[in-house]
Image (tube, rainbow, N blue to C red; front, side):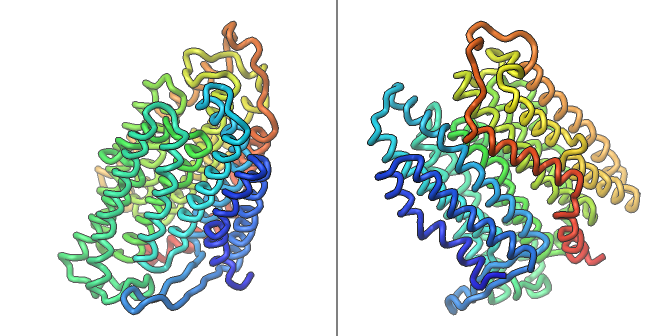
Length: 500
């Protein structure tokens, strides 16, 4: 354990973001890439070491809000590790993709000074974005959680608005509006709890100290606020547009890492802190998750734009997580957290595949692709591994996540003798068929069959793009074989939440 390690992991990227801007502005995208990579790699090492030792840090803050701190436990550690692992890996991937994007936006001939200036700004915003996500999941105070929750929206807005596709400014504003409204509703829930308890510190929150009518209202407000972040059904409108428009490295962070923070919030703020209210709401989370699974899968089947297909797939995958949270069983909830990890790995690989296709094939339309497995073998293999992860096929981590999740859901249905839960379990299995359908359909049309004439000269991407994919592909297989890397911390936490 390194003293002040978690404070460093959170604030070093923020403090050095201006330096990343200067480095990019003066030395170009190469130097900015390696500088940003080094910062986030250092942060990742600190987080992993802190997770191994169960590190927590607490500091005085203000009389109004109490103390603030950062803590790693069975819930926050997997989220924190995946956020920084993805952020670190995608720095390398960003270099060729973003240079291509800068040139594309300049009509194919961006000046060296323009590329330097834009790369400096991009990596500075990237560092703040990663820092905001990590700070949120490590927070130990409601107001601190809200501050970091809002901080990650600001660089996200600029990253989409400055370098996105299509009407990027309108889509950036849509992202800011939806997520900010969700955050304000979340804050209302926090204020109801904090003012009732007399403290905003996590350690001081006791459900019995909150009036019964207030505790239900606060739980619903928190669930709605976090549901917007999760992009679950009814609050999903923004996600296909934003993921479709965002630069692909940012899509690969928004989808696998950022939106899942909503699930972290439900675990921490509702299931852990308001257990009685959570047990009353669990069946509604379960059903809400099921509807999201089916809707996202059905919409993914209708897409020709590969990034929008993955965006709707992400909506469906968030439904799996909510479905598991609502299972009200140790294994079902552990499976839900494993699904976050699995989604981070699998969807990260698939969005990175989409980015390579955009750069190398010059299109994101699935109908204009085909037969690329022979021309891009590394990309194809990594894409297949990512697809197997999302489908839940062994030996990937996706299999372990889905197996545990559905086992827990069935366990609760049997133990409660609930017809509703039995039906939702069966329909949940139907959702897995939808998942396999759109993923296999995508793979077949992109990588197999006849190669169109306009793609005859397509070649494999460089190592900046393929090496990060190989790392994630290896990680998902290792985790599929040795799931206890995370489960040995997750299971005891879930047992504590459900008091089993």
